Image (cartoon, rainbow over all chains, first blue to last red; front, side, top):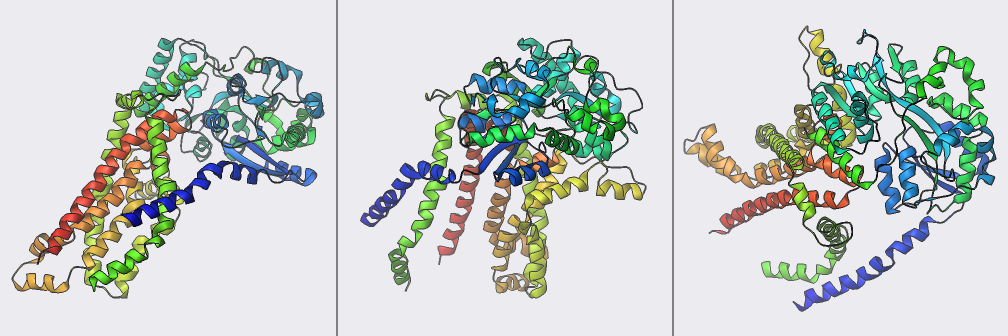
Length: 359
Length: 281
């Protein structure tokens, strides 16, 4: 018994410094070196060549982490477990981050390229979620639309209702993201995608439950592969993914804005409050706004860019896909963007989406 | 003799300190974090609300499905592994070892990769259906169904069944089996009255080692279930990431832990029964 007590005590003594000093020790270690930048962005959202060139030009080493939904990014920022220097969330998530005091205002004096090249319309549009225009530099924008395989779909795709047609059983891919999924039945019922009425949301859930047996899979980035390989006929995707997909499989066509209306989204660069390399972060954001870099980035990714200098550079290469890359006004005019609905509705969204998935 | 060894071991007990440290830091302490998070609300007040939420139908349904699929894949693993180990037991020369290694091979590959490979095998235009259509047979719908998840589980966890079964079966004294045959027992009688009871601890620990990872997996169900078939592991993962509700995620983990503890108790019970039998003169 005495022996055991001795072991236990020595164990405690050994443990104590760990638990007390542990956190600080590791935090300090990480901070070493000024020539580093921690970027947290969507998967496949920055061209690798563009990143390499940034490292060469500035000597700043970029550490890139990726997420696949806004919702999975948020906890890591809110917990402050990792101090990132640059983030690229979407509109409503920027709203939420600002509301929680998790972002710091940008120093626009350090962002000459952004001021010069980003379409003022988009800075204006960004005020919908960044009220004072202090936190965001728009990076990419687009709509949520339907990609379809013309070999398997022989009718025009104009309405979201095609996703509920028995004919396409087991051939439909839906987004595995609560807001994008629930937006579709809301629009089909003629409601706003920012509705706060639980009964509308529940009706939307019921439609998704009814649709579930027709759905082949709920996915995020994997939807692209399945459409490209012809594994499914119809898939809900973001417009920016369309160009790359259509190049990979010529049978694919894209409907950027079904007639009931769709979501227009903007992703923007922001700097979190606990960023430790703020100067580098500004350098990076401004670098991404440089015309040559933005064009290069566009070529490898295909997301619509608010950078006015890009269109002239890539117009010829695009040929007939130019309308997809730079959608005409009628595609995005009068469309809704998501606003942040507050924690209570957030929970309801999560719960309803869970109910769809276990049904 | 025995006492001396015991004395020696106890004098070297400090050698266990690194492991004890490891266990406390990375096993016991985190468990208390989970308990603490699961039993409090966001403000830090103690509450049972999270546990009560778990009792709602959607969570129970996912839990039920998880138990069902885990039981099914455990049973299939047992059916596959037992005859194999019986055969391996008979031929203990190098060829048996080769077959044994072949069955352990999946353990050396990244399970994420093997699961993704299964995705391309089971897909609508995957290998199986390509083969079937080549033969002029109708395609089978496997991907994104519970069946696909069971296939993935069996493939990934079969080695955990083979290992303990092989060990316990090959330890059975050959003379006991011979004695049974001498006394006129045929193959089935030997199996039922000699081999099965003697290998019971192996069966129990094999079943535990398959059942627990199968119950808690979320990668296999996400990849082979197309996120359409939601297991309790997937819900826990989503509560911690997408939903950002660590309290609920912890409460769900606690419920899951009850199943795991039950399972381990069962194994301990079987083990102690075995030891009592051996202790008898």
